[in-house]
Length: 131
Image (cartoon, rainbow, N blue to C red):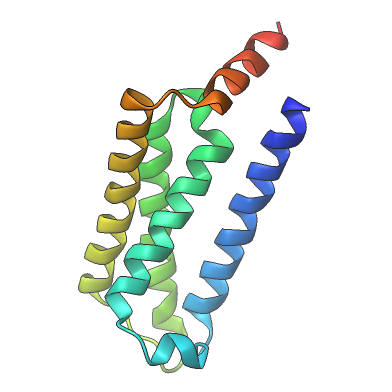
């Protein structure tokens, strides 16, 4: 059962990344995204990517490295917008992406410190189960 939960988290992480890439690199984003505040969407998107990445791979105790790679990936996606008609690279978007990643890191840190999460013990047990 533990492996199924971990697989579910990893599939969710991949689905979120695919959605963010699709919405970031299409020439014309969905209308709901056009009518909203762009920076809030960046913060929310990269918060969710960071959080699902942590659920999928955070038990490896490389949380900071994972969040750094998520931010680096957000930079790559922003640079990819240079090649898409109607899309533009923006440093403010990168700042919003960083805020989203750092917000996820802060929430994860607080949860790990103050709230005993049952799935953390389960995933720790999964790592010990392999030996």
